[in-house]
Length: 112
Length: 112
Image 1: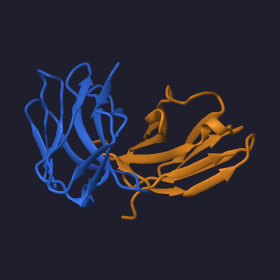
Image 2: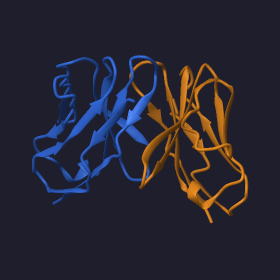
Image 3: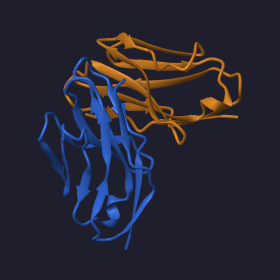
Image 4: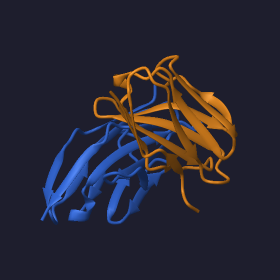
């Protein structure tokens, strides 16, 4: 079935370090791909999305490129800030319905 | 818009008691989702509705769980009887049917 696998955390980085969180997916057809972010005590919020192969989603300095050949959607940011500390979820939406499948989440802590 | 509203924010109950979680989706959204989040299993889709009709309840763990959506502005998730292993954060999310989920702040359920 459709699923998402993302790198396990937790991840701890110093401020201004480069961030990569890996995400791969399994899906039939051509899903849409997403990164959601969850701050402490809150629900998930959409960070960025890509709806077809080679699309690049970007927001708040974060980027991810939909790679069909490697079935990946890795999240990157060139210089993280303390305020980026949160849990990041990779997700896919099937193209045969409106179901969303989430990865297990990767906790990021950025230290000054 | 106030966003997706969930109540209560926190619920502490004893094993065997009935628990009812409530959700008010964003007006105009045709889809409503119930998710459960635990450390062990991450974010799991329990059930989702389209235009108040349950579409997929295959994620509901067992018969103790039931969900209803009597109208477009209200949904409930009921657990009867509750068990300690039901302790988790339960999220409601709504969607206009496009690419984005809007999450509530969640209900933290503790079953003692």
